[in-house]
Length: 89
Image (cartoon, rainbow, N blue to C red; front, side, top):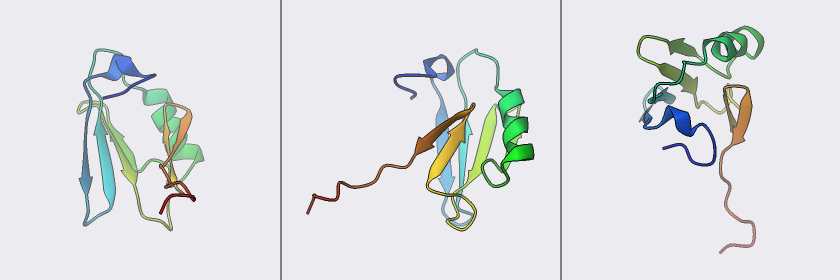
């Protein structure tokens, strides 16, 4: 579920393939699929988005460390993976 933003894509689903290290996000809701930003990502930021499928409403990202930095770009916004607090034991 999206919280704090993009809630118009709820309910969404995701699945991770540990073998290929691919994350697939399938957008729910009735809001238009972000085709423009997906095409832009593929053309201008290689590795930030592998592919998308409008019919399935799916975005597929690579989570291989040498391809993708510790971030995920979605609809023009960049989200960083959570990191543990340095003071935590």
